[in-house]
Length: 601
Image (tube, rainbow, N blue to C red; front, top):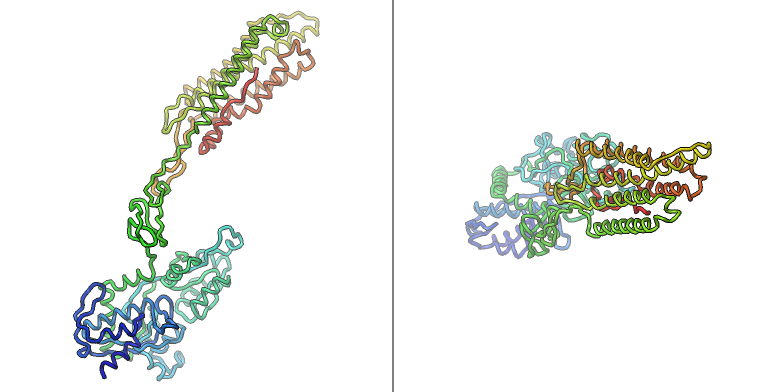
């Protein structure tokens, strides 16, 4: 008879215990739980304790399988552990389970001490059905006056969950609230489970928000998917469980009002049963049972440190990577890569690629060869009438300026993986400015010489302009550039500097860029640019004045016009320092702009 009673009681055991497992308890001398061996007497010697309990379905705390007829979930597992602790004390603990009303308030009324009242209209007979409600209830003052509480078996907070929005969907982003404060300010709607203490707290804390009351958590989630509400407010642990099992949902991380979860116990429960139940619940706290169950239901399951893969059978460098919920080894920093995060990514120094350096040498070689070819031609044709009119000496000066200016491309190819030194930083402005001054100064002085001669002829005046005067004019133009560059070199010369442009979250550099800079480079570049613009405007004006002179005598005007058209688009090169500073993270891109244009003789 006793054996039959025990088998009948097993049908009420929660937490997925099958009939076969229940039958196996009969007559066992020992019972193992979590690696611990508990001495248990024969079932015939155990004292039976039966607790009538209503169960409130709320995943993952309590779930019911329609096909299997078995209750599962966090509380189901907890009840199974309580039975184990009871057996260790010589008690055979059984639970007569029955579904309670789905609303928290209605279920709590069935164990409250104020039945048959205006607050709780349930008849007294109804309030005697259960001694305990298996549900995830929050502790609060008003409830403590109506019911007894079990020991706290979990700590939680109130939080929110939302659907994962497509970042490309701009319309969806307009209602993508992250907190209830944002939702309240934006006029959004939040779903809350009706008839709960949580609903009262949320509505008091955010009174201006819009709310949609849901009869069940599943209905709240469905309304969230349908766009009826932007956020669903509920217990954080319950929301975490849903997000773990449904990747279309995302817990926002908003947490407010820390809560302690308990079971409501009727004051009518037998005192001995109440004390024993609380004792066994305290045992579940002290021996880490609740910690184990919390990990099982609410934490993301990942492989142990150093392992990855769906079966945790692959390596994952423990220093630089960890496994995610899918078993993929995720590198903790962009500095490491590979399937096991063991391959170090070298810092991107943004150095000029070899092909750009070779291109620079090739461009200089073309310019140098063109200058040399023109120089030889001028020398061989120096006695011809046209070349004599253009004066070979000054033509060779122009070629010299073209060569020097073109040579400025060479120092731009110098670079350093660190902070230098890179001597080419200051060499570049020297070569470019001197070459520019010699070339444009020669053209300017020649066209000015022709202009003065023809102006004197038109007035029937005799004027003599010596080559010495022309050379002095070229020297005067060049000495201005030399003086500015010399002061620049002495006061604040350009130097190579490398700046880290990106790092990982550990501060390790991922990329950097090197460039030439100085404290007052803007001042000196502005002076040089202004001076060169003045020279080009003067040359342009002289070209305009001599536009009607025969090209046999004023070939310089034509040459100046052509050269100015080459120099005007080249003028950004004078500002290369400014450009390189502003775009120093894209070294290879400004390198091409950095190079002087091809000079033609």
